[in-house]
Each structure stands twice: as structure tokens, then as C-alpha cells.
Amino acid sequence: MEGTDRLRASGSETARLDAELLLGDAIGVGRTVILAHPGAPVGANAAATYRAALERRAAGEPVAYIRGLKEFFGLAFQVDRRALIPRPETERLVELALAEIMRRLAAVGRGPGTGMPPLRVADVGTGSGAVAVALAVELRKRRAAEAVDIVAIDLSPEALDLARENAVGHAVADRVAFALGDLLPDAALIVGPPYDVVVANLPYVRDDAMAELPVATTFEPALALDGGADGLAVIERLLGLLPEALFDGGIAALEIGADQGESIVAVVARVLPGWSCTVEPDLTGLPRVALVTPR
Image 1 (cartoon, rainbow, N blue to C red):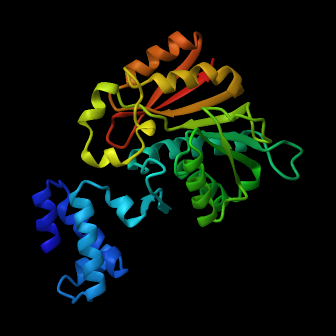
Image 2 (image 1 turned 90 degrees about the vertical axis):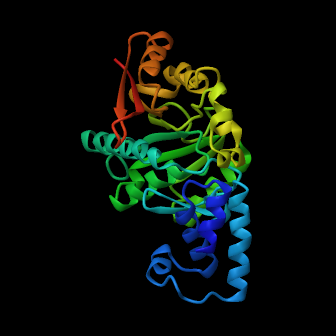
Image 3 (image 1 turned 180 degrees about the horizontal axis):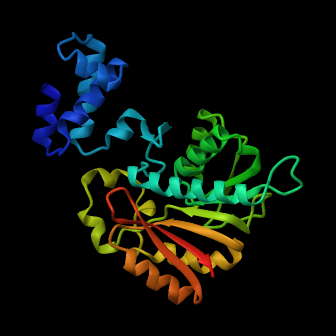
């Protein structure tokens, strides 16, 4: 395939997959159709669109930005340079947060008609809104949406706009509030702190590792990747806010790098003496999510 050869020559490690996705996008079909009909003719307009997309990918731009979407947790999210592209490993964060939310709802009845206030959940550093929207969609499937108030917080107004667009696209804009703020909202909201559950996929790449990241990451906001000297600077700032951000008995689920399992436990012990920190692995067995709670 012409596209595969072009991308392989540019250094792409997933040349065939990238070419198939971009061709499907240009034609307006899924990748499975491309695989099933590799010799099907392509119209002139689609061919021109495809070749332009190949050149963008050859220059290093992520396929997700070229297509304008990324699949995450079984949903299609609009993505562009306003926010980080959702990663597959972050699905583990959603799984753990959802399990914790459902456990708490089952333990103490909440929502309309129960006499109990909704469970309060914050997605800190929401970016594209992938985590908050995925949670809202899953809660709707479980008929628990009205029992949970979710607020999506980000420092970037542009990222919040993208998150809102994704919430609208998945029909959960009425279940997610959006707040501008550096970790916590700048102004008090109906879903301001404290929260029962805090989830966060904050920057955790070390300063000295930024230059080693794939070229595609240079198209993404550095603010969403750079975690300081040890990769945990932003996460540590959030840890310092947890006594204010969490209800007594609340929990924070924080995504971390695969090499930060021991480091995060040490940081929690230093910043929050007496608090508990357990690290959950991802599907490959690597450290991925730190669960932090008052003892």
C-alpha cells in the first residue's frame, strides 16, 4: 500500500495501521471495510484528502488529531490540540473510579427520592473530558446518573471548551458541570469541594524525559505532559489539597507513570502523614493508579 510505504519511510512504527485508519477516514468508512476490500477504487477527492493526511502523519502529527477523534472506553471523543489525546491506560482509571462510585452508591442510597444528596465526583485536569464523560455515560447506563454530581476541572479554558463539546456529543452535558481552575475550581460551584471521589490524570512525565517522547507528543499541550523534575510535581500539589478537597472517608484515584509506583507511596507518606496509598496495576501488570484515602 502506497500509504504504508510512505509512513514507514517517515519512521512510523505503526505505518500500516495509521495508513488504514487515515484511508478509512478519507473515504468515510471504518478500518474493517478497508481490510475487507483492499483493492476497492478510491475517488479523486478522497485520494487527495488521504494523501494530505499522510503528509501530516509523516511530519509526526498524531493520527487522532488528523482524524479529529479518538476512541476511549468504547466511546468516540473529539480531539484536537486543545487537550491531550486520551490514552488506553487511562481506561483503568475510569474502571476503578466507576467501581468506587457504584460501591458507595450501594452502601448509602443517594439521589432523588432517597433523602440523601448526590455523590460528588471531581475530574481534576479533565482535558478532553474523556474521564468525566465516560463516567457520566456509564452511570446513565446503570440508571445512576441522577445520584452523582460530576464536575470537570481544568486550568485551560480551551480544554474545557473541548470537554463541553464532548459532553454534548454524548448527551451528558446536563450531568457534568465544568469549572476553570488550577486543580480545584476558582469559584464556588454547586459541585465545588469537598468531594466523595476525586479522579485525576495529571501530568506525570519527568522533565528530563520530555525530549525522549515520540514526535507525535510534541503536537500535544506540554502543560498536560510535563510533571516536573520527578514527574510527580503536579500530583503532589493535588495531594496537598486533598484534606480540603475530600469529604472525610473520601477517596482520590490518581493516574501515575508505570515507574512511579514506589515514588507515589513515598510522596503520599510525606505530604499526607497517616493517609493510605495503594497502587493498582493496569492490564499489563504495571503500576497505573494510586488510590489515596484518609485512614
